Image (cartoon, rainbow, N blue to C red; front, side, top):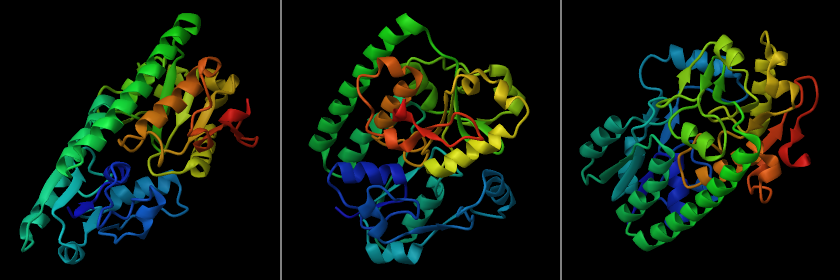
Length: 314
């Protein structure tokens, strides 16, 4: 089957199931082999070396679609299946646009639109994608492994909460303006033994800085959408310039984390389990069984004026 993926999380899952797409979106960068595939989308927004505030301003100023689909390239690749998303209209080409484009092709492909809104939804999409591409067995095996890892975190988190309680936790997926991470993140905070009250029970949403300050997080996780770890560290610096940042409990206790949002938290693929394990290590480091595989994607930021320290540096 010839599959085109217009969604980074779907591309990651397809590769994990042993299926290499014939084409991908411009944002698909994992695994590295995805970068060598034909690109079917583009964006008018310039993300390179731009601040969070600048990118937000560009998004607000766009007149028309943020993302463009290369229909000529799509027709050339002749996919049997197009995988896209319906969760967020600022993350990828809208599903309705993809369906319309597919219908205009001489040989219209099937369209699978992923629309996860919870942690369980995201992991269940592994099976949905597997069924759609004829890799049910591989998908079932992967889903079972993910379930086992999640259960291991859940059990350790229960013991950690019994010993230490649930730390007040704030996860932001943007900083200018502050946006509290929604969808699957609230589930993940609860599973990892944190207090999920700050995270919305729904889509990500902007909040006033005063709302973050009043929440006084004991753990602050900054995972800007589309930013890698180094740029997330700079986003923490943006927050540090705000009034009251140094008064936050998380800052005083050295529990501010800059996270590769591009690889963790933002994408609802099977790698959200890596994110869950990393989050547990941030919330309850004394109870984490091992250093999570994704430790190199997290930096603990002691103060904005001091260098970032990797989360596994103690």
